[in-house]
Image: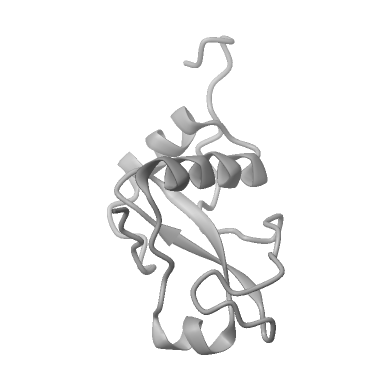
Length: 105
C-alpha cells in the first residue's frame, strides 16, 4: 500500500515512451535528425533518452552523473503516471528488461 492508502498500479510498461518528450538533439552525439525517445534502465530505475537513429542502432547511450540520472528517472515516472515507489515495485517483479543499460559516473 502507498501512503495514500491506494494500491500502486503494477500494470505499467516501464519501457513505454509514448508520453516522453523528444529533445531537440540526440543526447549522445547532438545530431538533430531521426530523433526518437528510447527507454534505458540503470541501477536506479528506468529512464527515457532522446537518441538519433545512428546512436540507437549502434547501442550508444549517454553518460550521466548519478544525480542527473536520478532526476531523469523521476521525469520518466511522471511520463508513466507513477511514482518512484511504484517503479521500484515493478522493477522487483521484472528481472530482465531486455533494454540497454545506462551507467552513471
